[in-house]
Length: 366
Image (cartoon, rainbow, N blue to C red; front, side, top):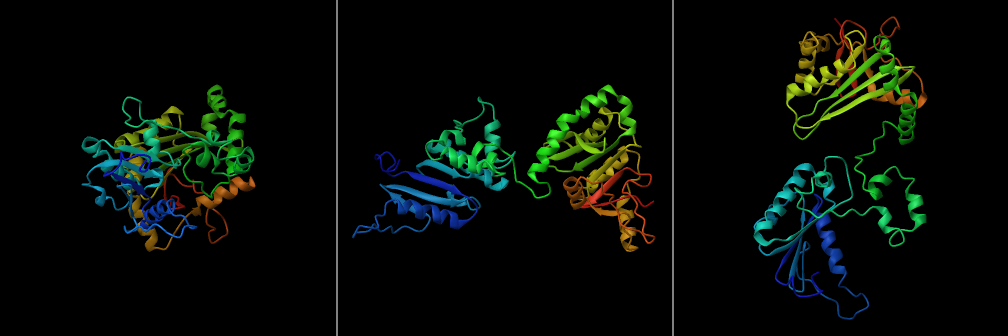
């Protein structure tokens, strides 16, 4: 656009890269190399600094996403180009949007946001979900099918389809990061089994199953930019079924706590057949849920007392045991051997609200 005519002469083009100055330097270097001819005796010399390039009177400048203050107060901004914007940190993504949008009324530039999808809730996902009448962008989607026969061959695509990241990297799916707790093929197998067993139909047609089934509710407390997550699973037919997965975005504290009770009410769950596990990073959530279930809320005092006595009973690594359970198809009884060699299950005792510190859950002791 800078060299096809003189329309951008005297204008400013801003390019926002990831949070690394080296990325900005590399990008400008690549642009400069487009105008270099290694076979020529007379080479072009660029006397601008590493993050700046002037072509045909147009000033092109790259800014790392964690230092955008210098992008404010510019004049004659014609283009703002954000590269791989889905991978900016959330505060940097918001800053990049704010800084670029302020030029709409000043110089009416082209605002271009380009990225591979990252995960639900990132910048591109938010833009893609906006209603047509509220989105200021002309959204263009380019999955791998557009590139077949141009930049990709059929053979290339068949090979890359074997990758676990194919749907995100080539097919515009916001999938988030691939973890290492569960293998992808095991997740696919679990989904397939869930469809075959039709646990919803079984429970609706046989309500007498509910009192005889063990249920577990997992709560990952998140507020502000993080989501509040609730998962309900049950143990039936020697298999663990996921019944509900709920994400609450920017909801009030009491609403999130009440949602846990609603889940229990929806499935007619009782105190006797339900256990609730909550991340220990949210003590206020643990306390509130305990109060809603008529349990003693002073669990922090209990933890302090037991730590002082150097007691942990029972304790287990939920992540590693769950992974081993799924991979080997075996039931794992979690707990720490007592002095007499016996194990106590985490559900032992008269309580049902537990708290987990990282990957460790502590059961009742009184």
